[in-house]
Length: 311
Image 1 (tube, rainbow, N blue to C red):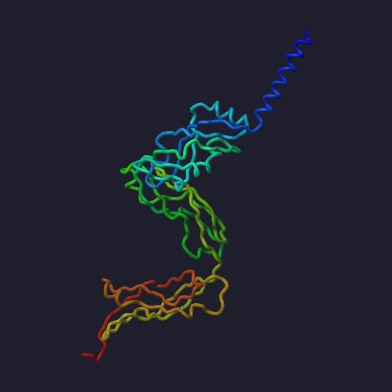
Image 2 (cartoon, helix red, strand yellow):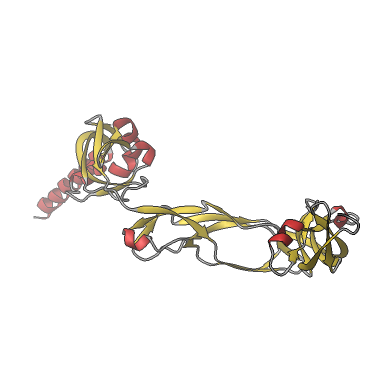
C-alpha cells in the first residue's frame, strides 16, 4: 500500500512539474478579449458607449494564455490616445492595428506580443456638452522677510474643458485649484496641484502644474515730481500735490539708485474723462529689476486753466 501511495505521489509530482514547465514556456494562441475604450476626445464622453471584442494571435507564456482564456466576458479598460482615434462618421471612431499594437500590454498583459485579426477596431463615443473655463489658483503663501513674488503665478494648462449637463455647466465660469500653502518662502515655487471638480461634472485635466518666481528684494522710497502728459495747446493742468513719495521694490542686489531713470506723470485725457478731477499717478521708464512700485498718494487732484495771454 505504501509503495502504491508513493507511486501515485511521484506520478502527480511528475505531472505537475511537466505542466508547470510547459505553461512556463512561450506559446501562441488565438485570444479574444472584450475592451472598453477610454479617451479624451474634445466634445465626447470619456468612456466608449459599449465594449468591443479584440481578437489576436497572442504570443505569451502558457500561464498568461490560460489566464486570458479563463477571463470570460470581463472587459478590460484601455486608455487610448485621441491621436490614435480616427473619426469616421457620427459617433464612430476607429483604431488601426498599427496603433492598437501600442496597447498590447494593456489589453493582453505584460510581456505579450499580438498579431491582430483585423486591420482596425471600431468604437463609439457619445457627444457631450462642454465649455472652456479658466483655472484660478487658490493659494496661501507667506514669504520670508525681504522676499516676494516677482510676477503672477503661471499655470499649465491655464484653462480646462468642463463636461456635464448644459444647465449644470452654464453657471460655472472658472475652476479652482486645491489650496497651495507654503510658509517662509524664500525661493521660486514649482509643483503640481489637483483641481476642485464641481459636482456632476468632469474636467479635461485633474491636475495642473504651477510655478511662481520669487526673489529677495530691496525697498527704496523716493520723493518724485509728478509731470503732466497730453495737455492740449493753450491749456494748463496743475497737479496737487506736485510731488509724491514712491515706494519701490527692486530685485536684490542693486547698484546705485535704479529709481532715477523712471518718470512719473498724470494724463490729461484721464482728467478730461473724470468727474472729480482726480488722476492716477503713472510711471514710465521703470528699470527691469523693478518688482513693484506704489505712489503715496496714488491719486492727485488736477485743476485745469487757460494759459494767460492767449486769445
